[in-house]
Image (cartoon, rainbow, N blue to C red; front, top):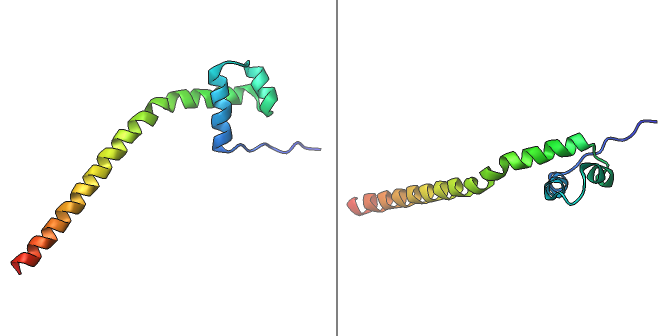
Length: 87
């Protein structure tokens, strides 16, 4: 009989990774708790830690794009009004 492969959602992976980062349990304890290989947990933990700084910089980039789009929308509206006034 073959064992069914576990599929974890991104939320579950984040939860397991966070538990590994906290360090309150050993990697083996976490692996037993969630039925995941310790190597997999280490990979998820490494991924989370490597992408953590981007989580904070992404908001700045998003806000800059939103401001740029808003400015572009305002400029387009202004041009439309100016054209209507000149006609």
